[in-house]
Image (cartoon, rainbow, N blue to C red; front, side, top):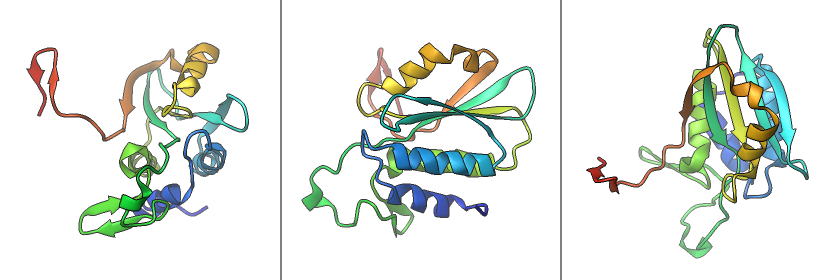
Length: 171
């Protein structure tokens, strides 16, 4: 597979229906992509082809871990969609499509940014986050050694609520 731009990768990710619990196709796509980027791959399957992906590349004493989840919520209020949820649509500076903000753009961003990164990096792409996070919990239970040399975790989910948190106003 040739190296994809952020836009090209995001387009491919949005086109893959990964509505919980349908993560098998997107898992396989990401495994192939990570192999093309010279990552070593391990998989923790929670059943029915629902694969958590643990990837690493580089050497060092400590690693940076990038985290993302592969599933999306279902298409709700489909009559209110002005575009096809499984087709990336750009209007001005905004992109539309199921999972764009939660969390396919985050995954696309770090995968394209890390393609030539020389450091020691790890990636965890989990399944089932939109349900009970069974994927992440299973990885923590079955592969705790994957995290032993991690000193920083970056979760690239760009969604957040603005409001109060323990008396502090978030902006």
